[in-house]
Amino acid sequence: MEAGLKLFSEKGYYDTTTNEIAKVAGVSIGSLYSYFNDKDAIFLSILDSYHKKFLSFFHEKDEDLSYELYTSDIRQWLRNLIVKLLDIHESVKTLNREMNIMYYSKPQVARIMDTQTERIRIMTMSFIARSENNVYDMEATSAIIVDFISAVIDRILYKENDNLDKDNIIEAAVDVLAKYLI
Image (cartoon, rainbow, N blue to C red):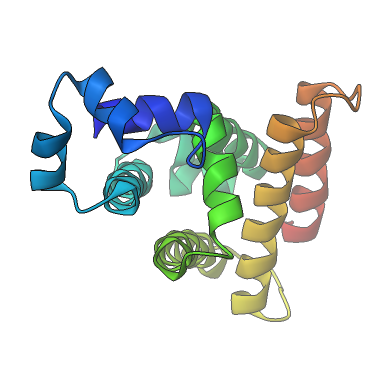
């Protein structure tokens, strides 16, 4: 799985072969196939592991994302959230690009990504629900916030030629969200 993650992150899913994965892992192709049926099985296993790690990030006690910080300084909480999500996505930038592409062609990938998005939306909704604000629809608001932050992260990661400063994009996103939530 480590070899697969390395190659998928460097070369992308479609430009990686099972022979290359076996070679980087230092195992025979026969050994690889005794654990995984095909490249899809390797990718899905990596994706599942990656998303479990990603979701555990939200379950850890993290002062940077605490409810106390959310209620006392929502702007800093939003900034921390965006920066942490950006750091996670940056570490496997090519893999994320491949996941987004494969979302539309592989139902298993879509299911894993949808599960992650829904869990993040529910976490976001729990913060909104515990605070004193007057949002029209809690579920719709949490979905829009998650989609908005995802779009901000995609802009920073994948629109490298637009001459916009990363920190300015983050601050603009924090400003928009904070104004809505306050």
